[in-house]
Amino acid sequence: MSKVVVVMYMSLDGVVERPSWTGPFWNDEHAKYQYGQLLSSRALLMGRVTYEEMAKAWPSRDETDGFTARMNSIPKYVATTTLDTAEWNAVLLQGDLTEQVARLKAEPGEDLLVYGSATLVDHLVAHDLVDELKLFVHPVVVGAGRRLFSDGAVGRTWTLAGTAAFSSGAIVLDYRPTKAA
Image 1 (cartoon, rainbow, N blue to C red):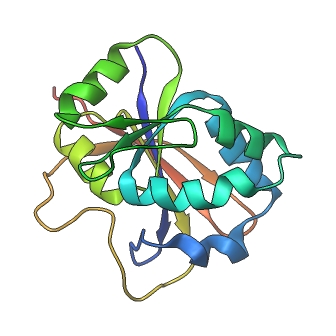
Image 2: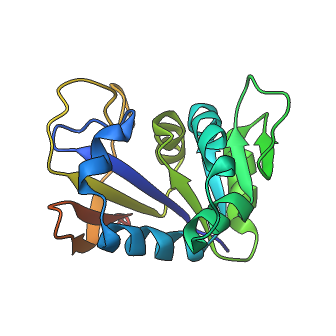
């Protein structure tokens, strides 16, 4: 059985949208952490907007590093109600998303990794499909933008399973859903 692992870049004020503000905090430690996460995953699970943004950028990048090669070769599952076709090693998930993700989780193998995709994450959390939530908090206040969970999101309790701190000031808070007693 696979786990759904969400890695979300977040500012101190909770913004997760358009994370170009993370650039000044990217360093070798950050790259090593993210590469390890990508290597431990069998596929990416993403929303349409994140897929379209990443599909524009990654295929044209220089593949001299392992991260880029892995990013381009890993299978991708895209949650969408609007796309009819996909490229970049992607399969469209159309129809009942909850059923499709539950089916993917039931397959043997490594993690299903979610980068970004806040709308998708809202849906996955609401349907108890997230096994790990890794919040990559950056020491910056963005001021405006989409927050991780939308107003009206289903309430959940999470347990801190670990942390990682980077010399850039960014930290990762690794949460797991709290099991009912």
